Each structure stands twice: as structure tokens, then as C-alpha cells.
Length: 461
Image (cartoon, rainbow, N blue to C red):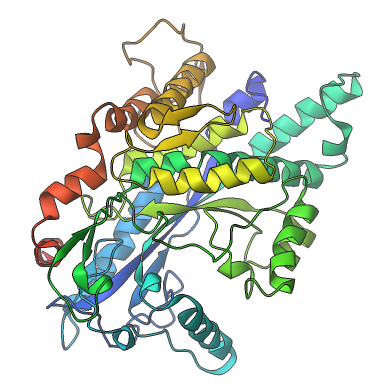
């Protein structure tokens, strides 16, 4: 855990790097999947996911939530403008759930040639195993790395305490900085897995499906299945088994994934449909992760938010960064079979539409309504940041500036106050009408695809 009482740690605690990945479907102007080739060949920031028509924006590494969102806006505008100019103009579908699907063969697998042909072969394998319908879900991945200054400050502080005989600092964590950093991220990944349900609840924005997703050839009827996020629910993007990973160290973490590959349960690490991943710098491979160490953590459970033109609200981007910092300062927790099994079910429960009808099992084994559990965590986050900013816990007027930690200027260019960002999330659970899923069902129900197409036309302008 980060020693947030250390002044050097405090000074750097909001420093980190953010990268966003946003998947979206290209569609025709009558609401069907585009059959054209990927219009952005050679553009490293705009690639394909499973489908030929599923664009994926990869932002560059940025140093703040606002910069990350700015990159997302720039690339989204470019895609929309390019699609307008095609011989048969297309739209960028702004929802996580797909529009009309005539039949499975209308979902075009991404095609590759030459040395990249194996990517197409892999997609054919996924098509056979999971079906193409499920592969049409789109979302956002949040990638975050804590700054080198922050981690080195924490490492040096812990090493000094260890050298002075402080037994609370485990010697196994401090043989060198690389080992410390790996241990830090593995511990964070375990905590993020246990608490990832909160991000699902906060960003759920896909309560509606077109009937063609659940009944072949039946188009234009709305389906509401009781979920706020279909792709994160039990109906969504999961393996055929519940993976249990080993969070004791990076070697065991990698080996626990490799074991599933060796058993033939998954084809590769890319097929591990898990909400949280650890990744190395550069191209992802388990070999590289074990040999070179962790570069960043990836959170994969964020729905596209059609209520914002770029797919995610700035306050949610900044909140997720604050949430990871909060988890990083939390004491290590046991993340064994029991905890991971609960965590996966918590994720699926948090994807429900009404969070006062499903439970969350907390790390201390309490059972709570999901909405109440969310408020409890958020209020503790608010307490934590007030303490970090040197403000008495009794203050509730929300006047704390986000760029002052312990009296030191640590502005991360977000332009937002921490207290306001956390209050924004609390409001979603104090009144369910403030949640995205509830707003979207109200705004786009009674003609989901047709109303979605009208939204596409507005974004085009």
C-alpha cells in the first residue's frame, strides 16, 4: 500500500498516466452493420476490434483526465467526419449494445493479411466459441500507470523504514525497485478486482437492446432485460468458467493465467475476459509481463455513455483515477478463491438496473444492497481525500480544492475538485434517476435504434 502520510508521496500522488481505448460500431444510416473495409488503415490510434466495422480508438498516453478526454474527442471527431464523406455515409454508433442485426453472418469479422493473418484466425476461433452476437458489445478500457516519481518516493520511504528495523515493511517486497513495483501492481490488481463492481455500477449505460439481438430476424422492438450494463452482466462478455488468479506475486499471477491456456480453457491471455488486467509497457504478452514487469493496470468494464458525445464523462475519467489511488493506499487484502468468486458475482450484480434489488458481498463478509454498498465506499473515499488534503472530517461544505494535498500544489490539470467528483457519483446512488442506465432507458426507450439514429445525426452535425 502507498504510504500516503509521506510528504513525497503526497506531493506526487495525483501524478500518473492515462490511456483510453474506446470501441464503437460503424453502421449504415438505416441502423445496420457497415460492410465496408476499415477506413483508417495505417492509423495507430484508430484500429479494429473483433468486427471489421468495430473501430477502436487508442489514445496516446496522457498525464490527466482532461487530456485523455481531449484525445478521445479529437479522434472521435475525425472518425465522424471521415464517415460522413464516404460514398455511402456511415454513423458511429454511440451505444455499448448493437443496433439492428439481420443475422449472424452480417457481423463482419475483421480481416487481415500477411503476417497479421493470425489475428483473423483468432477472431474466427472466437466466433465459433462465443458466437458473433456477443462480440458486438462495445465499451471503454481505462489504462493507468502511477508516476515513477510517486512509486520511487514510496519505495525509498519503505526501504528506509525497513533499514531502520520496521518489521511492518516486508523485506520480500523491497529487494529492488522493479520487484517493489511489480508487487505494488499485483496487490492493486487484487484490490481492483474485489472492488471493480463499483465502476460497473457508476458507468452502466446499456439497459436497452434491439429485439434482433435475442430473436433472429425480429427487428425494431425494444428489449429491457433488467440490466443496466448488459455486457458486464451474466448475459455479457464472460468465459465459460470462473478464472481464479494468483495475486501473491507477478510470477504466480502470470503462471495462473498460463495454466488456463495449457488446459485449453482459453486460447491466449487475450481471451481471459476479466474486468482487470496487468500489462507490460508496449505489446502485451505474458512472457513480457513476467520478464519486464508491470507497466500499467487496465480496467475493462466501462460502458459507452451516449449522453456524452465522446462516450465517457470527464468526471468519470477523473473519478476512476482517484479510485485507483484510493485502492493503492488501502492495506493489502486476501484475494483467494472465495474473494474472487464473490468479486465476479458482485460485478454481475452491479450490472443490474435496480441496485436496490441485488446484493454485494463486502470484503469483511457483510451482505448489502448494491446501492448502499456503493455509497459506503464513496463516503469512505470522500473521508480519505479530506484527510489527505488536511481538512477536518467534520467539514462538509465541499470547498476543498482538488489541487491541494497537504498544502502542496499537485494540480493534475483536470479542472475538477475531488469533492465534487465524488459527490457526483454519490448522487447516482442516492437517487437512481441520476444513473446513466435510468436516464438512457427513459430517453431512448420506445424505439431504441430509431432514437439512437437520431442521436447519430445530431453528433454528425
